[in-house]
Length: 192
Image (tube, rainbow, N blue to C red; front, side, top):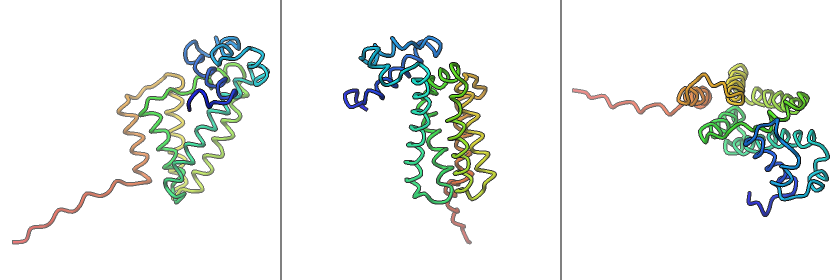
């Protein structure tokens, strides 16, 4: 989005996310966010009356953006069988391959108040249910969910124990479980 079309709320959230990436969640200050967003502190406080509300907004934005991406990917697959699982794999793979960092605002929110995990818990519970209801194999859908969330957690806490190639291979293998690659054409047999 171009900066000139962002709402005040979006400018504030963008500034807060950028600052948490730069200085870490502990050092997030409302003054710095207001300055980065081009607002007075009063303008910031009008939209987010407390730091806790700002952090809550970062968590909600993260969940909302992921859900929008997921639903676009589902639509590409015409909402057919396994479309939720395949969409989830595609969104995570795109984030991973583009090397997008996990949103540091999530860590800032959790550090400030572990209760901010509740919207993520609620969303993940609904997502897993959607994945399983849409999947041809419910248990395999759950395994995809757990694998992706495990990879996300490792990345979020900077504890990657797998190489980039290993992670991409794991993601691609998950996709192939639901969307097998086209079989190689059979070679023509030669008769004598």
